[in-house]
Each structure stands twice: as C-alpha cells, then as structure tokens.
Image (tube, rainbow, N blue to C red; front, top):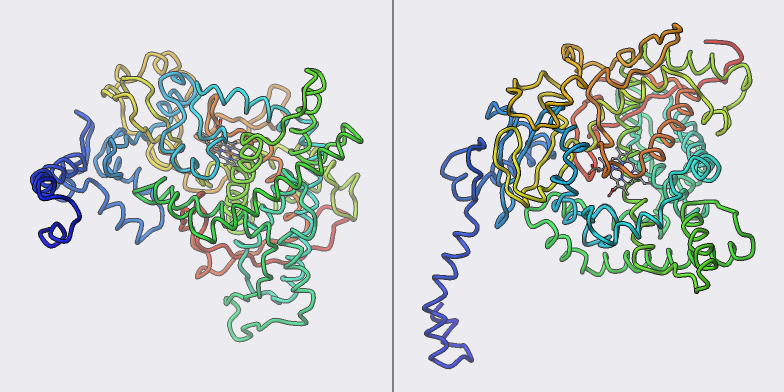
Length: 583
Ligand code: HEM
C-alpha cells in the first residue's frame, strides 16, 4: 500500500485521505459480500457458509458433477424442507429453492403478477440478446412490440406448411448420415451427441432463416464420410465405440454456435453477466458476432426483395416476420422497418431457444428407447399400424407424420419430457414483498422452482394446507396424489387411459411434467419443439432398430451446458429394411 502511494501522482493530502478511507471501503465491501439471510427459511450453516455463502459447496459439487440444478434441489433434501435458501452469488440476495409440484404450478400459472420473468434469466441472456423477449419482465413495454413481430411463428399453417418441411429435410439428412455410420461401424456403438446437436442446429437455423445446404453441418459430415471406405473398428471388443472424423464447421454455423455456447458462462459463473460481457469482448467472440449480424442482414434483405416481388411465399420464420411488417407498413403508408434490434434479437433468440433444448430432449429420448426395448417395439408397431396402409414400403412423408394420431407416440413423448429434465428448474423473481409456503419473500428475490426433487421425482414433502397461498388452496383438487414408486422407470403406458368410447387417449395429469414450464411466460416455441421431436422420433424408429448400448457407454449422468445433456450418448444401430407388413 505504502509503495503504491509513494509512487502515486496524487498530492499528499489526497493520499492520506485515501489511506484513511480505504480500510473503510474494504470493510464495506466485505460486509456487502457477507451473505444476507431471509428470516425463517432453512439454510446451510457453518463458518465458511457464514462468510462465503454456499459458493464453495456448489463449486465443489459442480467440479464432481457438472450440474448446478442437482445441487440446488439436493439442498432441500439435505435440509429436509420444500423451501430453502442458498447464497451463491456475491453481493446479491439469496436464492430461494422450492421443490413442490403444486406450489410451482401455482406460482407459474396463478401468481403471475407477483412472480415474473427472473432477473437471473435476464442476466444469462442479456449480453447476447438484450432485446429478446426472454430477457423482459412482463410489464416491459418492449415485450408487446416483440410479441407482435413473432405473432405468426407458432401458427399451425406456418409450422405445418413452412417449418415442418425444413425440419423433415434436415432429419432425413441425419438418417442418411447414421446409415453411413452404422455401415462403417459394423455393429459397434458410436457417439450421437454431436450429430444430434448439429442436426438440431441445421433444423432450427433452417426453420428460422432457411439457410442453404452449404451452411448445413450434417451435409458437410455426410460429404466427408462418403469419401471414406472404412474407419478403424475395434474387432476384438464388441462393446468399444467407433469414432468418426469430424468435418470442419461451415462458417455461419460455427459463428452462431460459438456465440450461443458462450451463454453457459453467464449461467454458471458467480459473476454471471459481467463474466459473459468480458468474454464477449474477445476477438473470437467479436468476429462471431459480426458474422451473425451480417448473416441476418443478408437474409433479411434478400427475403424482403423476394417477398415484395412475390408476397405470401413463406419459407421460414424470418419470411413470416417480414411479410407481416411489409403488410403493416403498406397499410400505414410508411417505409417497412425490419432492421430494428428487436428483429435481429428475436430471430436469433429462436435459434438459441430451440437448438440445444430440442437436441437434448431427443438425446435423452433415444437413450430411453434403446434401454427400453419393449417400449421401442410397441412404438414401432403402433406407427406401422397407423402408417403402413398408405406408406407401404417407403419412408413416411412430412405430411403423413404431421397427420399421425397415435396415442402411444404421444405417451412416449410425454414420458421423454417427464424424464428429460433438460431445464431442471423454472425461475421467477418476486415483483413485490410476498409470502411463499408461509415464509416472507422480499421483492426482488429469485425463486427457483425445482423439477428434479421431491414432488416430481420422489414423494413430496408434507406441507400444511394453511401454509399454501389462497389460490393454491382453492385449486387443491386439480393435482392428483401420484404413486411415485415407478417414477424412476421409463413407462409410456402410465399416460394412457380409456375414454368413454373405449379409445386409448393420453391423460396429461398422469404424472408431474412441466418441461416447457407453465403459464403466460412458458416456452414460446413449444409447438415447434414438439413438432421437431415428433418428426425425429418417427424417422429414427422407422429407419433403425436402436439396440441396447453396452453398460460402460450407457450412463444416465447429465451435464448442464445451457440445457442438461447426457454425458454419454451412444447409439448402436441396425438399419431396418422398410416393412410391407407389421414387424
Ligand atoms: C424441447 C424443446 C424446448 C424446451 C424443453 C424449452 C423449454 C423452455 C423453457 C423451460 C422456457 C422458460 C419458461 C419459463 O421461464 O417459464 C422457455 C422459454 C422460451 N423458449 Fe423454449 N423450449 C424448447 C424449444 C423452444 C423452441 C424450438 C423455441 C423457438 C423456436 C423456443 C423459444 C423460447 C422462447 C422465445 C422463450 C422465452 C419465452 C418468453 O420470454 O415468454 N423454445 N423454453
């Protein structure tokens, strides 16, 4: 300190004042950093926790198991309470963790004025898409404008006529890639995580921008593998996986994925947005950002030209947004405004929202189907029963897949959604002082509604009825008393019941499932996500037998990137010859 001041350019008077106040500033910073606690809500105690909060415990958990959300709900189990508080971000209020289906449903669907889009989520996405709806509170005046921009995105005509063909085309490319891989692998397992993530990127980027084939990662991979006559196969070990070379990423895909993957820093780091902002200043990130911006400008300009010449030819979400703006501008006799920050961020937000989420969900789904051969066989049989009469000895078309009404397929998807837990908590911030399960929650508190603990994956904590909110008490009868004894198993049948006419239908209240969240701020892209997953599942099960993968490659451990991904994701595929009768 002395040597720093001695070399300083400040006059002596200033230096002495600095010297006198600096311990005070230090003390102030320390006192601000010491975790504050909410009265009455259980928390971890101990000397380190007194000073550093729960950071050391969470960091050491993440080192062993790269998942923050499993650590959060583990604190409820450890402290034996459906509501606990943890302190994992310096200088900020503690987070409250709740694990109870009824309370989560109540907060998300009925207490929407009191609990809104979380500050935590704003910080995670705020550096990359500050004008995307996901970063906005519900009373933000910009939200209304953004909702107008995207209002046609999830309309059945847009999805079925423009988006589904894009996703189907990309899914068929993955089938082609996996046929090549299955042949080269000669019965050995191979890794699917990258293929599925790349396929999801191709599909969602195709759906949003109608990116050309030159930008498809899977096409590049097929081109590379088709030049190979063989790959090294471990002949003496049937359980060993075969590895394939990876094609270089096309530049636009590379830039968008680099940017999107960087969000994980804001998600994981205790310094959250600050850390992500610093990262975004590096030359690599700046270059990726410029490529992404130039790409959007290019696609906007060429689509505007095309739509002015032939209106109504919608091929992707960007076209839909532009068409609406062109019509509105013509009506209001003004120049179209399609280069606002809201347009850029909303389009990119769709890629961020849809890319990792859908691939993670399909990855968990394929793992469950290969581990549960009876469910896979029944799914294939039901699909054949529905499709064979018109499809016969070929691949189903996208229209035939969209038109499928197969309750067992819906049940398989619900069961995958229940078990995937790719976003294991939904987060809300209290907009005013309030109470939750009988405890005072000050305005501004981030509340994590865990989906991976008691009430979802194991029996709930007992909660006295009078501790619940008025709205929760009024809706008591809406939630069933579930039997949790089989919830660790993949059993699609649990979702099926008979209606009055004796037909099999899906009962959505059969088990706790809220993967896409609930209420007015739940997933905007749910329909697109579900459609994409449906297309992928039907194509995979039609084209291949998913054999069980050897145990050493078959762990169900997860890792959180932005979504929770399986750490091991292997496929052991046998190509099917297309059936002309039920098999
Ligand atoms: C399996 C696929 C998907 C899952 C599991 C999923 C899950 C979620 C979740 C949990 C949220 C937060 C909701 C909340 O805070 O209550 C969310 C929000 C959002 N999702 Fe998805 N999502 C998926 C696919 C998609 C797709 C395909 C898109 C875009 C095409 C998308 C766009 C969005 C957007 C824009 C939001 C913010 C909504 C708002 O601010 O009101 N998602 N999603």
